[in-house]
Length: 306
Image (cartoon, rainbow, N blue to C red; front, top):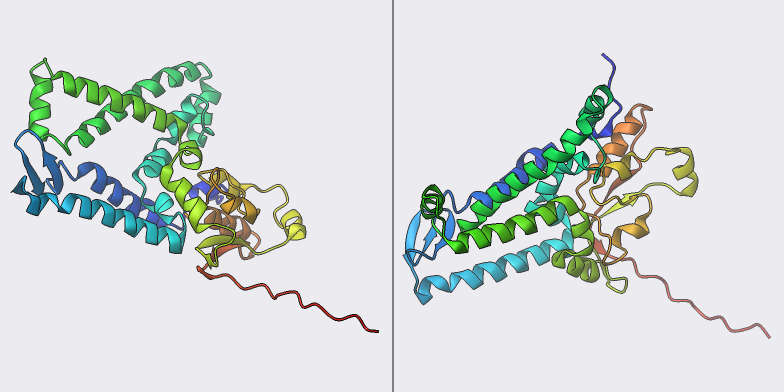
């Protein structure tokens, strides 16, 4: 059997793709359903690990403490490991990766192999895909808006409202607004991460500031311009698998500022290893551990010889 040379099918980061991302996605969207944490505005109490707690200062104080604690934790992770949270745990980025075929159906993302084969045999299916994509996207975003609304109202109450045929106007307005926002995020994809995400902007400005003595985790290219031409030739596998379309061989683009930013997901490293494995060679990309930058030696001025 011929081995596939498609780097998209060869994933070293099985732990990230199969366990970490689904875990954080489920933690974000299923916590209220499983009564892990939610705020029941109808019954006026908190629910934590299945236990109802009254709206008192003793319990409500943990809401801002938990929120700012999570923000500080993510900030520490960003300072040390860069935008690792974006590539490994961010629910939006995870859903962006999972829903790439929906954007491909309307030409907003590269088409996967199975879609190309279908369109090759049935070119008329292009119109079917263009009709199915928004319909599936609306159903998905509405389902997610339901799950998010369970954070502030009990799931049973929401289901009863829709089952009655006359849901509360606040539910209709809230879910409609979330659907619109969800459709925007879904079809914009990782362009939101590069240009609009407040966390991404703050991290890019702070952690990758040129004058900062600290260097977070980043991708490094083991080569020079000559090796990039001779070893890589026309290969763009590393850039193809990058969720934000960065060429990791151009290290200056990884931390350029607000409109770029490497996620440190490692997909480019895996793709490079796979391509070079056909030539029994090591990949040209790897992680560079975080640490303090090497201080440049000061220019020593020499006195002119008389």
